[in-house]
Image (cartoon, rainbow, N blue to C red; front, side, top):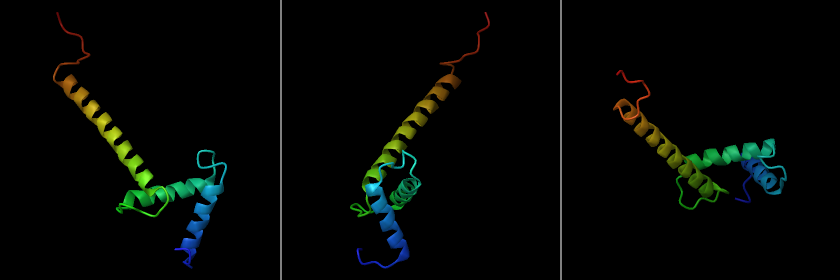
Length: 97
């Protein structure tokens, strides 16, 4: 809320304002931007609202879901390969003649 007098709220507004104006950004090494993105990521991981007012919340949540799907796919492929190896389909040990 624009009228909130909480010191935490004012601090967060300052971070968001900085994030909009910063030319370095988090990838460029700006510590304030890194802190802001960390706070936004933590919020997005916990947020369950379908239309959240926190900047980038929905985009961050979608990115987290995308990364989780990619990780799951890699884990599945790794598991399949391990199963294939243990069933004798991809053994690397030399055979006796």
